[in-house]
Image (cartoon, rainbow, N blue to C red; front, side, top):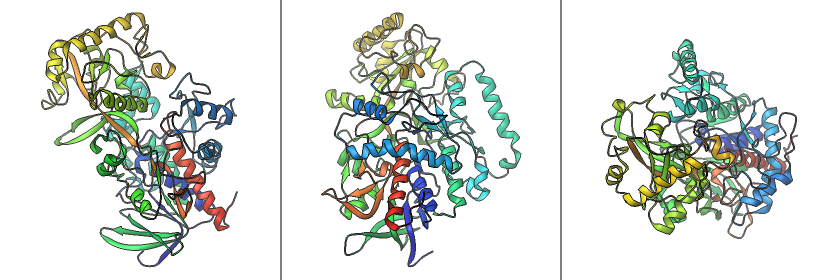
Length: 571
């Protein structure tokens, strides 16, 4: 394992971008090594919802989507200059990537999920692709428990895996939801053979299904994966070509040569406060990120900069509202909980520290985060903001990690949460005193929401007045599923931070996924994909899966380019 080893391709990072690069390179006949610094493989992708945004995919016998419609949509929403060739390369190569993935044996399906900017020219509701449930035991008992496990928020009671259908049934408490929960629990405990191996549910769902399915194909092709192996620096020859990597494992360093290319796919820099302070106009804190703790620290970005690489789009993350709670049975430690859909439910409102609204609360989570940043730059009174809700909301919906009363009644809420993480009062005025919000402003904001709930029209921000908002609303709330009066005591408030799903910016790359230097020329032998690279979309999040879709597409593109240059390209 140590010494002058040589592979055709070295992939740094084991998430979706790296996994696709490795899989495709192996199918081109190249000898591939994946290195992963963590003790688990699968990267942030394995902990995610596992959705791929792929326009013009033509699955299920084809549809009327097209290259032109996809570009029309993207052109209508992107608000800053981007590399046009790279953007068009994504649109052209993403369907090819998906077709290839399906051809390897990975099952894929279309999810009915509206693009995040509904109503814009070219928007659709069928561009998000998911992988159905995967049997994790197919990886082998030696690997089954070593793939990065999903967060508690993606599991019922922190134990039972949920697919998207089950998640929405439980989240909305729709008809039959108790039966869904009972079936999940019964299925888990009836699986006695797996319980002897691990506590983990053998049903890999969402991001775990995606990564489990891909890695089952990777391992069949003999690709080597080394965990606990960290990139220390890139090796460069006298001509400036990247020729390999120097890595460390438990502190001992060694070199691995890469004959044809190194693919950097180790995620972004959201867990590096120094880089956040350097790049972000409102840096936020690393601990508000919802990605695996202390994982994506930007080491690969720094290593690439040392050999002359440039960066782009580094001023923003893939934002998502989050909140913080102590870990169950370990209150000195904290968990980050996503609140992506909670903030747009009826019987609630979100205000800044001036007590006023600043966004359509039910909008896409990245748009919500952008609004937090913009409002903070304008007022200095955001980051965090506050989600205020009443007893009706509390009974039915989660507020980040605070589960509804059907799951966590008041008497089961830990005592140290009240007045520190979650605030409760019998009146709005008392609640405002507890969280130091101006009562008069909040009183007026709540009165406005209550009035809008009667008419179903939000004249300020249009909440609940488009297909995306309504998808995550409550159909029992009429005439607008995202609006309901905040009028039933007790009243609650939780602070909402600007978390993220990773960073939007990274290494500047061309349409072939080659890393570019300061003059815009390719750094020979060096490629990047996923959040290690700058997004092709600039400042926007087009739809569900707009991180993983491009990540896998440019992993695929990188492998194809390496194979072509090495003379190993196959169909």
